[in-house]
Image 1: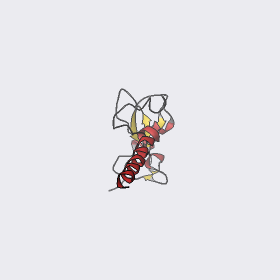
Image 2: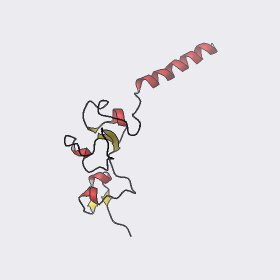
Image 3: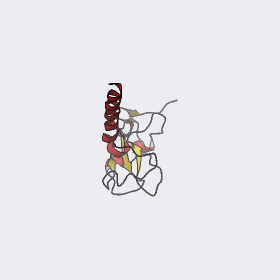
Image 4: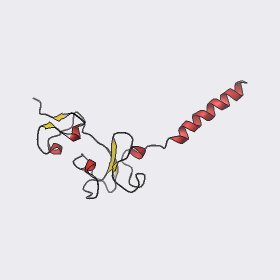
Length: 111
């Protein structure tokens, strides 16, 4: 009985692994994994990330303004600025509520 139970447990674990595709590693090309389009792409980049290329005119609005590293291809980037990132230039050089900071968050100067 123990071997059958172990085999059943092992097969159910394997099913969970095969049902969820692996996310791309940092810096990898996400263009094809995201259906040859830029923008929000949780299936390849993970939740809260978009597939973007710096300066790519056809990328959707969610890619514009994000601090995207220079690359020869589309890469996965965070959809929002981190708490330690300078938001001024990304938020139209205005303080106050800013979509790139996250819902209900603002770009503010400290000090």
